[in-house]
Length: 291
Image (cartoon, rainbow, N blue to C red; front, side, top):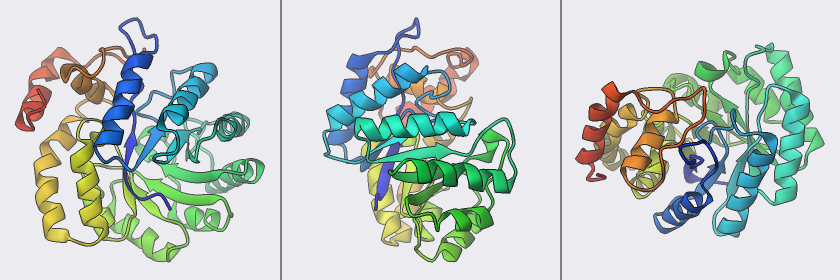
């Protein structure tokens, strides 16, 4: 089982939108040195929606080769086309990813039966561990707990990223699953609470810039050290909020650029962080001595 702090890694780019492999290499070293427990390559934070299929696979391959088995690599391979999701998932398996993260099909708003059949079809077609990803705020579809429970019986579906931020609902899901598959938080602001309730890790945006602290928060929360986890979370709270001032990954890419870790490149239709928000995010970065 993959546990702990799982960074939803950004995809570094130059100002013209081309991929910045040198910065990607440096970021991977940064995570290896600072306790990140696993890496998601080309998820939402990695701008999966704007990378073409060739780039998508090249980034996954680069991450897999660089990490070289030292920590697990989870490839983002979800799509709103079942055929495309199968193709990306098969490519990730061939490349050597340890698992795949598959977002619920977005935009076309499938029924719960459609969600079930989509994920079952991908899992039955490609023999690699697959983590479901429910983020209704971005997909316009909500995978209900009952659907997750049905999918948990599919052998190579091995977890779910719950990015609803709804702790009572997430807690019920953990209880209903009874340990059949792990639940991971996908909401930095509430992650420690879900882990205290039994989640096994956090697939995190904040970990991009504070990997050591997020790893520590996950470790404390998973073993039930509530007071220590809450105290550490309070130190991260302002940054957790500031990294969502605009759509992810706009703020986190701005933050990493300000920290000198990569260029400011981002792809349309995403745009650089609005100038009116620079001061607020800078304040949060300064509070943690990051700039």
